[in-house]
Image (cartoon, rainbow, N blue to C red):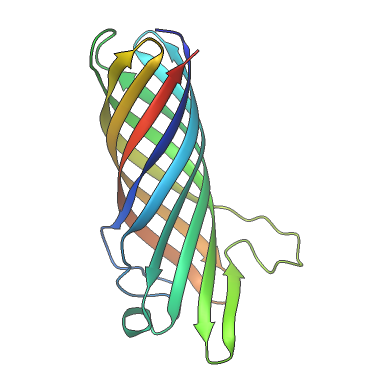
Length: 181
């Protein structure tokens, strides 16, 4: 297998705890779509991972006090321990995420967008930090192509200047399509 790989992942973001810490955004979130693109550099049993991911989810007015649609966009860095070198290759991973959250809030007069990195005119780029731990298996399809089912548990905390720090706990269940170069 080539040491350089490109992976596109798609699946579901599933909350594991209520959203807490940000006034008006606290409550039970709904599951939503998740996708990501990552580059991996494989060195023996270790793969270094870098890329981005995006998760979309919402919280209804009945649960959060305000009707909110969230988009979390994160830069991901991590490492995978590949438990085998050939055939079906199970793996476990540990990674860090640096995320920006956009919150679309429905008000009586329309929709307002709030960013976790400050007002859009401020030029600030404060990122929320988090982690993910996961497991999966790289399954050869033939040639340079693989599928990669996986599951990750994550935590991400981001600051909304006017509301406080939003804490999220989640599981991502997804499937990756991998191209080895």
